[in-house]
Length: 222
Figure: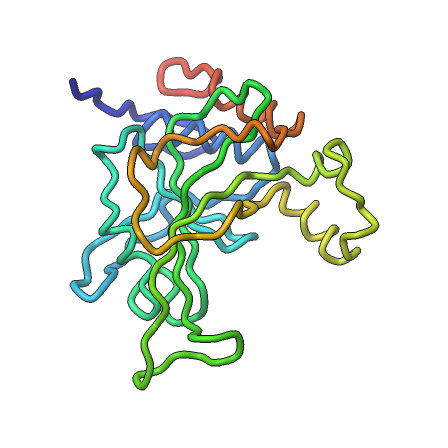
């Protein structure tokens, strides 16, 4: 059975789906700046049209929101992170996060899938026509709110003052877990995986709860 997306107004934007509005509510609660459908692109060697759902300008990430795996076109997302014909052009690594239904954390940290690709063959060597670009990499990431650092026991003295100030101004940022892989993961990539070994911070849990339970009346945020 196909469930049609419901257009929803939130924060002055008309979102194509209620799920997108819910994720915007999560970003708002974290203080994470977002741009909704900033512009369309033609990506990959076949120049396929692609309109990314969100750009998170402070942290340089892109976001694709899908409510079900059947709606997710992984080939298009791989094209979107192409090293020279993707969202980032040839400016460096392009990172795209896949977000689906907002999870009920139950005290565990949700891990979200991502696809990334860089333009460097090595630590200091930038690719050109004479070398192969690195392949796209698929990874898992969790959002860590700056407000949760102390609550989770992160020694703030270990974080450079400049980095900590930037983190606080961003609100939150995705943190990678484990090593990324070259093969497309199996299963439903729109569904977050709950990691019981990483406790979810109170600020992050509150943001997920808000996004999951937000009420929208007459296409307006309540």
